[in-house]
Length: 416
Image (tube, rainbow, N blue to C red; front, side):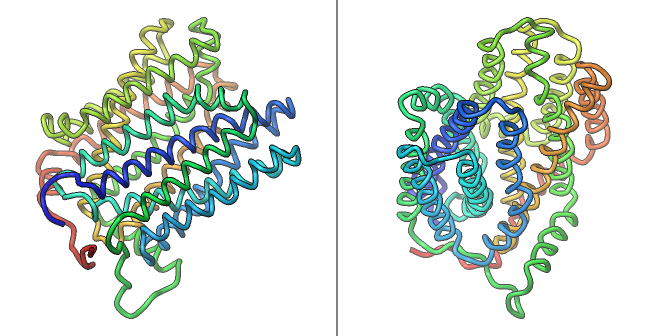
């Protein structure tokens, strides 16, 4: 790679990822609308969330192995075309009146299984198309595109397209995946990890290698374990946010949706200015201040009865969430040898998804037993403990060394 800028290859990757995010967002909105139009059974409706999350637990780790064994570009292209096919089948079934909830959930399972592996491969591919000095900017642009499409555009657009016809959001989703496949196909070069000395080993052995590398690195280990732990308390908080919005803040459905809009705009701002902000205040203080913001969010949700205060807290959390993603992803890409990028990234996704699943169950249980504010007070205490326990881990010397020392380049650079 020559130069020190984001070139046409990144532009194609960014456009592909952004269009893919739009399509996924449309399906996320349309799927529960279709289920709700067919049944009012809460168990059937909630099963959609389980179907969407289960692939992240099942396929994250083997997906990382696959991303390190094959050409990551071709893997992403294959996943996109497979998703085009299954979504096309669903759209056709909806148009002909032959679709049922079981088919919808089967398609969602396949699509999300593909999304897990696609995301692992994409994160592993980024360092091959982006100069090391521009990883923060690249990850910020990728995060910003996802924020806009999934959280700001897909919601109203998905609802409108569903009103036109139930099949339309899924057909458009298939089109976005097809466009993504074409754009990724235009990337020049090969992007595959190097086979380990001694030949290919079992999936279990290669997964274990990814775990060992991550656990042996204090900075990466801490950030990965933190995201798993904090996702438990965050998802627990969000799981009952609708009750807090209606019962304590007195908001209706529009006001409840506005809270997520606050968080989305914060996330967009963080994505846009993230690389400059991290450079200005350092990654050390980006992480430290972010953890304090997370504690502040739980405190606001636990104690405040003001919708404005809660909205401001969610906006600040959105900024923090984007900055955390930029720093964590960029550090992982900087510190991990290319041959391990897929597996190390997949461990991070696996633990994050586990935290989400655990938190979704925990929030309702804690709120039901101890009262609505309880999940937020638990989150506040956990966040404070995390701040104290990890403050020294993110010291300037350690983080500066991570930025100064490149990962061992044990694989050939892309050609073409």
